[in-house]
Length: 137
Image (cartoon, rainbow, N blue to C red):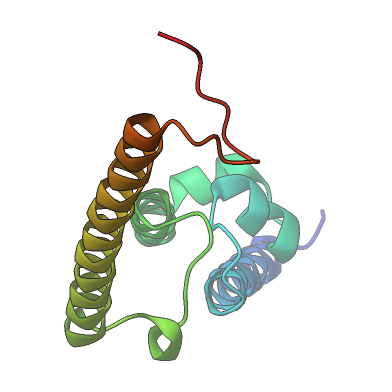
């Protein structure tokens, strides 16, 4: 009769299970810290486990789904916090752009008036300017 080795097999299976769980959790942390999209595929590949096994682990599955959904809502190229514009700086840039726009509008109006006066002057005096050709009436 053979010896009953089921206790050893159960212990070994439990160790393999815990090792796979720790690899998967570590892979999730590494991917998230490296700003790599966390998906079942990337976690399975990084941890060396199967995707189907990941789906059977409720806590790991929930974490992967949470990070995957969070990544979908984030911009394609995440900007580090210290590089993001503050509301005050954005407001200042908007005010500067509006002031520049007002200045350019005034300059445009001034140049149009100047051009109209010059053309009117040329028409009344009928003296052709070398760079401006006025068609005869």
